[in-house]
Length: 559
Image 1 (tube, rainbow, N blue to C red):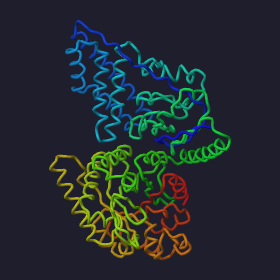
Image 2 (image 1 turned 90 degrees about the horizontal axis):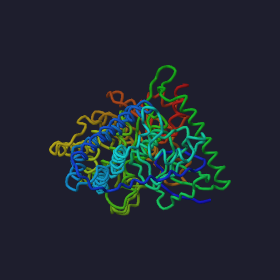
Image 3 (image 1 turned 60 degrees about the vertical axis):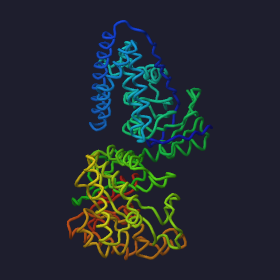
Image 4 (image 1 turned 135 degrees about the horizontal axis):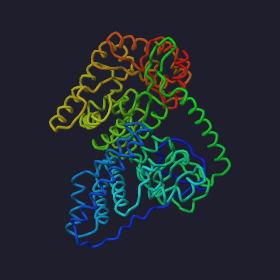
């Protein structure tokens, strides 16, 4: 067995035979031409044909996956119609007297290099997009037909030279595709009935190829690099799109374990088919919003796959924990914006920085504390180091222009803390207005209720914010005076304690008195033994791990 570690970009398990997708050679001969104007006309005609092909591909994707997933190909069409792109191609033709194919390839390399050099990982991923659309124009110029041809024939280069020639379309078998890389248009044209999963040497979680794989429900792994081996063609493999693990020629123990996991996932999928699109509503008509918790942008795929109605808790501190230096505004904007776009109209509630206590970061240079759970953490860091906080708030505001983002403040104990945070938020808004940068002026602000102080002050806090979300893990710790990191206190740290449940009840009642909604985003929300209690208390929202969404919906709908 050979084990390869890549980056999981689309969750799921696939077990099957490998088919290596043959790399397509896009070498273009440079020719000196006598009539630059005629060559420009060739380019313009080819570009118009490519735009029409992309319109057809866009309509195909919209019909199968929805309008929001087809927007990628609208962006591709805009790339081709960009005056700067056309000017670059035509300038090369006119100045260097080269053929249109060579000019298109040269322009693609220039634009791709420009995107790759940008700080934003989302913009870096656009390098693959400009190469994809340029390849399409080159195919037209070289007389190669596209796989989106109206007659339904499969003609695309990557598909023709790889999947079809390797027998997938001919023998009806399904395979795991290994490739150096896949362009977004290639991925969109894959036959899901014949492809079990994808593994590529290159690529990233931010790429449109990865997003399309998640949309199509295909397990996908990128970034295996030099471990990519064309000799794997025909071998059996197991891929885990969550962990990024690839097993070529797996041993019996690995096969048995992953078959078991796959069976569990299929049982879960059966529940999804039964409940997908159904409201989270009791038999008596009580409606509860069912959201999911995430820690990374790539987790949004699992939220959508499990049909959660939104993201109730995006733990933004992981953007800090997984780095060795401060995440820049651009880096954070990239992450928040990616999730907002992927979620579409669904709410994305992002908790501001919650570092400290059990989550330490070296570059914060925090002093040692004898009792860090009661120490310098979360909102306390943000309010005393506003230069850090404002960077995050600016990124959140900028990302709010791309989706339904709300901001949630952790570890609140007083009204003054909320007002101080809102003041810094207003400063960030004012700066962005001055820079003429778009954001949602009416972005919602909420607080986490996770201290007894915030419960006691819930009436006053409710007058300041748009929603409450109860963090039951810390609320249990602080209410019962039990360190949640101390295993010897497990028998005393009972989240079912009447004291904890009374705190939850008081919070919900205070929220409703002031006309705001109240949710739960801690582990207790997924505790099915308490679902009846939460419904009786009038909870408005529950945010749980993505895999807990459907079992919880099932229980609520049968209540």
